[in-house]
Image (cartoon, rainbow, N blue to C red):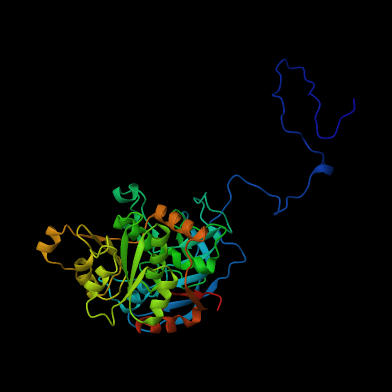
Length: 401
């Protein structure tokens, strides 16, 4: 009998029992090939190991001691845990929160030494075994919230930013002022393929934060909102999100450069706090009926605007606090608050749904980030300008420079 390659003939035996039918063909020696690393597949791929192309060291800006200048130096590249991703950060926005962290302004200690930054846009280069919905090469963003338990009462309601176990990028864990950073896979932003990583970076904190704040204001299309600090990184995005949401905006800031910027970004009117003699009267006069805006969005970094806002919002108006000036307090006469039904709200970054929505506005071309790009090595100069109040828009650092 002729035996055809790749198959076997039934075994002849005196036993009455039949052997199980073979379903896998037996290959002849000539048909066997040595396994190749390119063609080998397995149902269990070990993904926690880093690819050989990932370096062991990287450049980073490191804070060695609170209040001291940053140190630009090489540090080790870390490996991701089972539920984490390692991101090759291409660009990172620079936020005023990063300056607060350096100076130790807040009543919450940072880790030391610390790599700051929480607006990192880059590509996934390694991931843990438990990560199933992100692939190597995907574009993702490292946000302020680096990780959360996803099981507490806050997380289950979509408020992971309030999770008591949440970790903060560039504050309690190392952030995006380095070339390779780690974050929890469930929390990282999924950046749409159409988005440019350089220009989208500031959206990962500034954009998400002001977008959530605008939602918290309760404003509806046709309403007016005052944006305090409108010429800065957060404010310049808040103006655009507000316009895209159908709101009229009053920009409040100082100087002619910021007047020009806010007008370009769609502000209906501009109030210069450095020249006005009566900011309350000027803000009210900028509204159609003279009663004041329906809400005020405060992204300022000084305390005084927080004390002024309740006086110029209309009755039943909402004051949304986002900025975090050092040691600032919020106060307003009880009588006025009750009789005029003024509300105060805090708005703290955004959740995963806010992130996806804010990025979608950017993807559709409704948001344009005004920014300047410098090398990561020049980060300290950016903070110097920030402390002097000389930044209009946002700065982005290129981690390759």
